[in-house]
Amino acid sequence: MTFAVETEHLGRIYRIRNNRKERARELVALQDVTLQIREGELFGLLGPNGAGKTTLIKILTTLLAPSSGWARVAGYDVVTEAHRIRPLINMVSGGESSGYGLLTVRENLWMFAQFYGIPSQEANRRIRALLERVGMADRMDTKSSDLSSGLRQKMNIVRGFLTDPRVLFLDEPTLGLDVGAAREVRSLIREWMASDRHRTLLLTTHYMVEAEELCDRVAIINKGRVLACDTPAALKRALQNEARFEMEVSAPNGLTASALEALPEVQKAALRPTDYGALLHLTLHSEAALAGVINLLTEKRVKILRLSKREPTLEDVFVALVGRSMEEVEQEGENHG
Amino acid sequence: MAEPYHPLAPSSVPKRSGWRLFLQSVFARAYPRLIGQQREKSWVFFDVFLPLLSVSAYVLVYRAMHAPEDYIGFVIVGGAMLAFWMNVLWSMSMQLYWEKEQGNLALYIIAPNSMMSILLGMAIGGLLATTLRALAILVLGVLIFKVHFVVLNIGQLFGVFLLTMVALYGMGMMFASVFLLLGREAWAALDVIQEPVYLVSGFFFPVRVLPFWVAAAASVIPLTLGLDAMRQLTFETGPSLGFLSVSVEISILAFLAALFLLLAKVFMGYVERLAIREGRLTEARR
Image 1 (cartoon, helix red, strand yellow):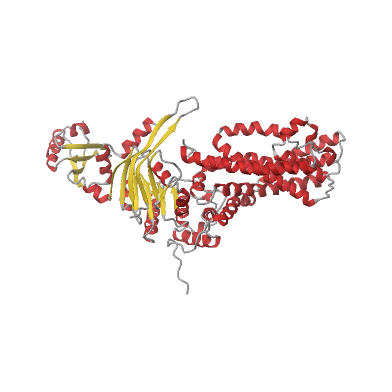
Image 2 (cartoon, chains in turn orange, red; image 1 turned 30 degrees about the horizontal axis):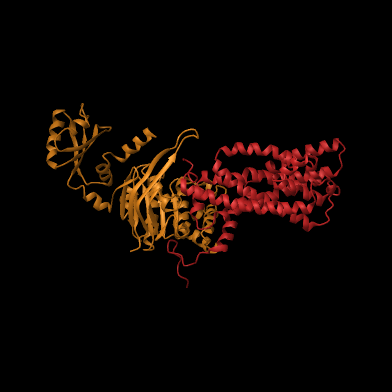
C-alpha cells in the first residue's frame, strides 16, 4: 500500500546560537517520529506550541532536511525527490501574510497559481469559483492589505486549494481567527476533502476541538515525540476506565487541589475560581472515590452547586499522556523561552 | 448545456511544466512590480522629482563653470541610469530577504517552478518599472536643460543599454542570494557600497577622469562601462572622453552579464540547499 505520507524514525536537530560569539547549542525539535498517513485521510497533529508540528510540516513540504530517519510524500523521498513532490503539494500556515499587499485578492491568487503551471484562464476561472464558494466574490478586487485577518486567512486557504494538491498541509489554519471565521474555515476544509477521496490533508493544531471535529486520525505530539496516534474516538476510549467529574462549588474555604489529590483513588484535581465560587475538575481511578471527595467538601463546608459526569476529551488524553494540560505545557514553554 | 463548475472538485486542466512553467513564473513574479507602478503613484515624487533635483545641481555647477555643453547631457544620462543602480541596490538585492520576512520565500521554494524564474521575474519587473522612472528623468532633464544628442547608431545604443541591464540585474540577482544570507547586516553592506559606487561609476562625470586602475576596478559594476559606452554613442564629444573603446566595453559587459547570471544561479542553488539543510533561511525566528 502506498501511503500519502510516511515517516520512519524521523528526527530534526537545530543548531542555534544568539550571536556569532556564542557556541551553537542543539535543539531537538523532532525525534523518532514514525507515521503512516493513508491517501484520503484527514490527519491531525495535535500538540502545544513548540511541540515540533511545524518542523514536521517543513520536512514533509521539502523545506527542511531531516537530521535522521526518512520521510516520503506521495511515495517520493523528501530529500532526494523533492522536485517530484512539489507539484503535488501545497501548504497554508495560520496567520501568514504571504503575497503582496498592493495586489488584489484575485491577483495574489493568480500569481501563486502561475507558479504551479496552471494556465491563466483556468486559474482565473478557479479563483472566481473558489472565492464565490468562500463568500469572497465581492472582495476579488480588494487589495489584500485591506483584508481583515479572517478574510486574509480564507484567501490563504483558497491559495492552498487552487493548485489542486494531492496532499495539502495546513499549519494551524485557524490560528488567531474569531469563532465564526474558524468555523467557516473548518467547514471549507471538510468540503474540500469530501470533494475527492484521493486527497489527503495533514493539519496541525493546538485546538483540541478542531482536531476532534475534523480529523480521521490524530497524532498527539509533545517535545518532538509522537506520544499516541489513533482516531479521536479510540484515543478517548483508552481513558474510559477512569471517571471524570465536573463540579460547581461554593467558595472553596481553604480547599486545595493538592488536598483533593491526596485522597485515595483521586488521580487529578483542578480547582478554578469562578464568579460564584469555583469549578472543580476531577479525574478518579474509580467512581467510588467520589464519596471521599464529597466528604472532604462537606468537612470544609463547601456546597456542591452542580455535579456532572464528563466524557473524556482529547484534552484529557493529552493530560493522561503528558501529565499536564496543553495550556500548562505552553505556559511552561513561554517561561523557559 | 455545460455542467456546473464545482470549485472544490479536482481540476481536469493539465498543469504546465518545463520552460512554459518557467516563463509563466517569470511573468507572474514580474507582475507585482509592474502593477505597483500604477497603484503607488508616490514614485513620481520620490523617484523622479527628487533625483531630478540632484541632477539639476550638477547641471548648474557645470553651467557655472562653463563646462562643455555635452557634460550637461552626461549628467542627465547618469541621473537616469542612477535609478537602475538604486533599484538594484535597495530593491532587487534585498528582495529575497523581504520575501523571507513576509513568508513568501517558503512558498516560492515549495512551488514546482525554479527559484531562478522567481529571481528573473523580480529582475524583469524591477527593470521595466525602473525604465519608466529613468525615462521620465531623461525626458524631463532633456526638456528642461535642452540637451543635444548625436546618436549615430540607435541599434548599438539600445544593444549596449540592454547588455548593461542584463549584467546589472544579473548582479542584482546574485546580490539577492548573498544578502539573504547576510540578513539584517546587509543594510550596512548596502550603505558601504552605495556612496563609493556613486563616485567611481561616474554617474555625473566621465569615468575617464579617474585614475586608470580606479576606473578599471569600478568597471566590475556594469553601470560604469555601460554608462561610458552609452555616452560615447550619444554625444559628439563622447568618444574623446570615453574610458575604453565601445567594442571593448561591450565585450566586458557581455562577459559580466554571463558571469553574474551564472553566479546568481550558483548562489541561489547554494542558498536553497542551505535553507533546507539548516532550516533558518525560510524562517524569520531562527
